[in-house]
Image 1: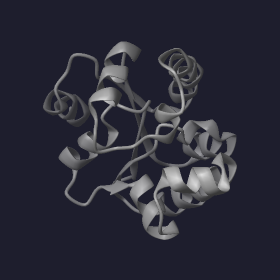
Image 2 (image 1 turned 30 degrees about the vertical axis):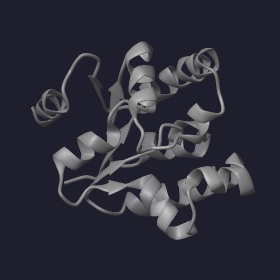
Image 3 (image 1 turned 45 degrees about the horizontal axis):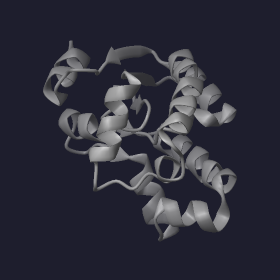
Length: 161
């Protein structure tokens, strides 16, 4: 079995779906938080996005050596090195594609996850970020699952087919 990376915009359900697919799933952002000993939003504020992306790339490459389900952060595609790695590595990359309006509602409703990018941008600016990332997600996906209007269980069933 190859490692499987779940990608997609924030709110697309990457972590929820990973939890349903495997008991031993890995959340890439959680691995990073454990490593740095602070929240991602604090790290962003202290060291900046570029330094975070370096850590993210290193963690991504290390996790590709496992045979696990790995949920990634929504910005994983912002690094050209990450995109090239995911495209060229012998891994599954499942893009959880969703309509912006539904994803935005999920982001607002989620009180557990604090997303630095979402907190520091207006709805319009987030839509611009979404628009920019859609093609990047699409370019590296080995599989694409449309998540809008579906329950997590329906999405999991579709992935397992």
